[in-house]
Length: 100
Image (cartoon, rainbow, N blue to C red; front, top):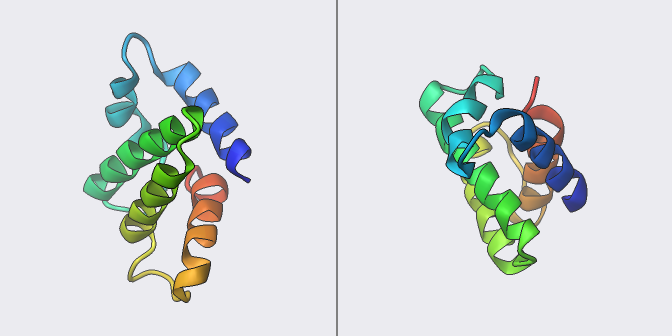
């Protein structure tokens, strides 16, 4: 669920961040699924951080937009779902399968 995502990312943030939140943008990709290219992992880490921020600020409309952006980066061309399932499965992918 959404709060599991928030807790998981906050834990990563606690261990990887030193002075600025944006440090995660270049530290997190090394922990993401290696099947993605380095460029794609960098994009994913930025979007995951932005998704976490949207949850933290209670902006769930913007969170859904970021979840769609994540789905386009991480899922398009790799999975076949209809649009109504796409966001739900993208969150499952982000929470359960992104960190090997």
